Each structure stands twice: as C-alpha cells, then as structure tokens.
Image (cartoon, rainbow, N blue to C red; front, side, top):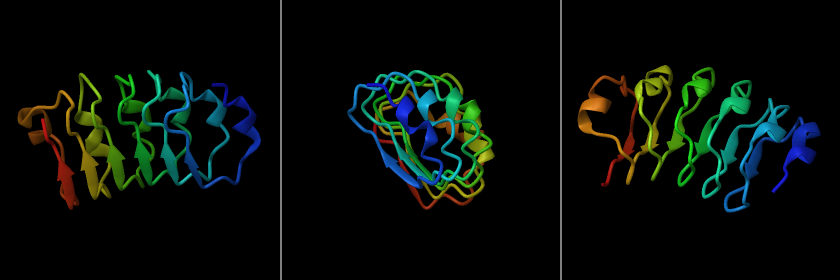
Length: 130
C-alpha cells in the first residue's frame, strides 16, 4: 500500500497502519507530531524514514522485517516498544530510551546476554517469551 498521501498530515498524533501491506514508511516523513505509530504485520524492512519523528512515545513494529532500529534512537521519549517476532542483530539501540516502560521482545531472537548490556532502569513491563 502507498502511504505517500499522508506526508502532508503534519498534525497527526496517532496512526494505526497494521496489516496494510506496507513496505515503505517514507510517506510518514512529515509526521513530526506523531506520538503513536503501529505498523505491525507489514513487510517493512527499514525505519530510516522515521528518524525525524522525535516526539514518538509508542511504536509497534511487531511481525515486520525490520533489522536495524538505530535510526529510532533520536526518539528519546519512546516509552513503549513492541518488537514481537522481530529479528535484530544489535539490541544496543535500546540504551537510548531512558523513558522505556514497556518492552515486548517475545518470539524475537534476543538472548539474555543481549539485554544485560542495555540500560532498562525505567522498565515496568517486559515480555521476552520465546
């Protein structure tokens, strides 16, 4: 699905696009007011176009093909991240989120040794079911 028509929706604060056959998030480049984003169950492989959405508080990337989330490190207000069934090589990006309260890593390829190196001092809800 093409979401480029949303690039002018600059005041949008919450967007749910789960299960929409999306392969590219570049249509959200202007979503600078976006607080919540759900793009789960899509064929997205990159979040590079989301790097300027700095007010983001909640993101659901579960069941996507994303393999690198370092571009989200500027969204320091993130308090909820859903990465269920997401396979990443590097989990260190999680250290950027001091406000992270809810983290779902269930069915992902994370191991306890990956998480031990990440500062999760504010975490309140953590799901790591294998």
